[in-house]
Length: 211
Image 1 (cartoon, one colour):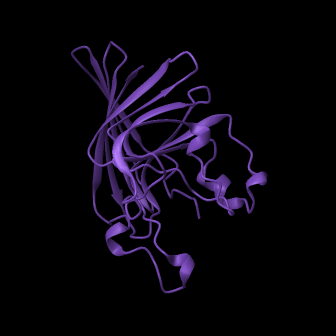
Image 2 (tube, rainbow, N blue to C red):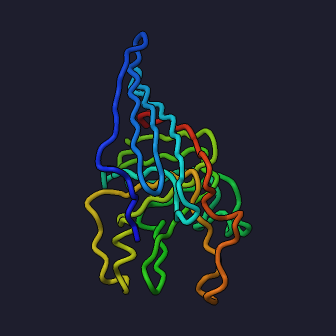
């Protein structure tokens, strides 16, 4: 199931603080409640304070997802890499700065599935062929993935050739992405509790600027 469980409507308020505009949004849901505060400043910088309240211990991820311009396919990031990694699968990776592309972040498993995660994100830039784009800096624990497919696209396909790229980049910024675990090796083998999404408040901060 790829449903986010969010209610159809939420709340949105705004206020002016000097030269800044502060927008606060809330949205409840059966799986997780969200509260995101956006602060806009005149130079184009946007700060985000993200607060999440999971309501179950069975979430696959807890965070935000958005669509980026498909041309912003060059990726420069400071996180664990250079290969995909998860909170229970990162011992073979190092924390550092790496350069890749959105297309190369996808791992072609025999059965399409959510892929390309990077843990420990400090900052990531998405740019086009001319080097123009956005820079995202983080505060707190954040992992990210950037693909041309949604989780639902990947889940519903049985073969790689069945996938149709979206006309935008699907960017996930998660407070926690569930570990891989070993459920494929037996019905009674699952992700260890310490690598699951905890049923407790989660938060992180982002600063998004032009690159």
